[in-house]
Length: 321
Image (cartoon, rainbow, N blue to C red; front, side):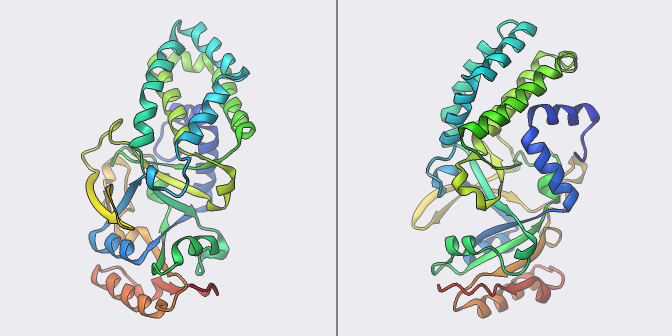
C-alpha cells in the first residue's frame, strides 16, 4: 500500500480484505488496465486530456448499486452481522443504531448519483488484440478502440481528485457472505487496535467499506469483465477538481464528470498525464481499422506523445462487424 503509514495499511486490510488483496496483487505484477470506448470518446480523451465518468444508471448492468445493496442487507441481517453489531455496541453503546440510520439515508443518493469510469485488467494475451467480449460490446458500427494505461495512478492511494478506484467483486449471496465474514472476523480480531484509533475512525472505515461493497459488487455473470472502477459521488463527497459537463451519448443527453489528466505529485497523484498514462491504443476490428490507426497516430503526435507509431496497433481479432 504505497503512501500509507503502517496503521493505515492495517486498517485497510481489516475493513477491505478483498480490495486490499486485489490491489496488492495488482501492484506486485505491475498491472495495466484497459478502457474500451468508441473512437469519438477516445478522441475527446486525447484532445481534451480528460477521463469521463458516467452515471451508473446508464450502464449495461441494470442492477447497478441495487444488487450490491441487496447482498449487503442480506449479509448484515445474518449471523455475522449480528456478531458485528454485538461487538461494536459492546465497545461503543449505540454505535450500530446511529450507523444504520446514517448509512441508510444515503443509499437513494448513491443509486442516482454515482459516476464511474470502467476499466478492465489487461491479461497477458490481450496485449495487442484486446478482449473478444469487449469488442463485441463496443463493436457494432462504433469504431471501437481500447486505451491501455499504466496502473500507477489507479493503485496509489491519493485524495487529490476526489475520485477513488476499486476492484469489482463478482459475487452471489453466499460469496458475499463469505467476504463479509472475513471483514467481521478482522474487526473482532483487531478490536484492541481499533479501540485505540477511536470510535469515529472505526465508524468512517466501516461506512466506507459498506459504501464500496454496494458500489463495486456485481452479479457473477459479469465476471469476465474483470472490472476496476473509478468512483465519484458528487452529492456525498464533492470535489472542486472534478469537472461537470453534459454530453449526448447514443442520443441521450446526460451529465458526466471529467478527471483532468494532470498530476498532483505533492498529493500522491502522478503518472496521470497523457504521455505517462498511455501505454498503447488498440484499434478494434472493423472495416476502417487501418484509417483509424493512421488518424490516432496523428492525434498522439499532435499531443506530443512519444513513439506514436509504436503505440497504436490494430487488433487482429477476426470478428465480423
